[in-house]
Amino acid sequence: MDADIPGAVKRGEVFVIEGDGEIAGFIVTYPKDNAQFIENVAVHPRFQGQGIGRRMLAFAEAEAFYNDLDKLFLYTNVHMTENLEFYSILGFVETQRITEDGFERIYFEKRLAILEAAKKAMKDDPKEIAEHLINEHGLQAARAAVAEGIAEANRNGGFYQLSI
Image (cartoon, rainbow, N blue to C red; front, side, top):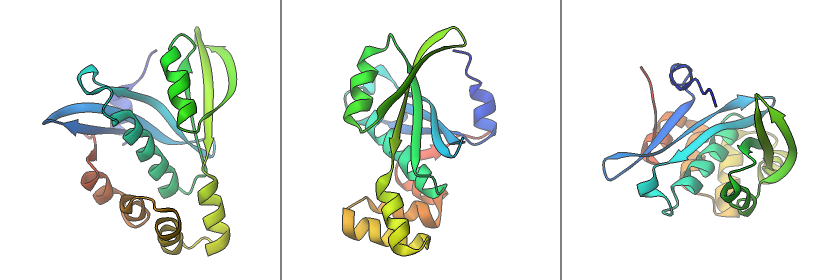
């Protein structure tokens, strides 16, 4: 994998989460092809098994909401078998298997149907959508804050955007 992390940092696509005063994990996510793409997600081995990965993927959902997108997508290497079950448990569905850039990849997507339903009910008013999602579906308050101001929600939720 030839990830351009410095470039992703410059574009504002890298977010980190701290644990015990150090970086516990990071996610690279941004809008692509009418969806929120999760290019990379990693948790430091010392923090694995503590829900950090789940929190980062929930953060990507919040980003999709903020970016007015109703789908997440990502890929993983076919040999990373632990990821296959993890993504399925979180509601991702396998969409294709291909060889790309010399890697055997499995693509997954997750439709955010709750956002689609809320938009129809609320006629696309972001504040009403956020209130509806929280009141009717018990989503975290941070997601509503994302609709109004993502930077503060990110910092308060333990995430912050890397910049140089």
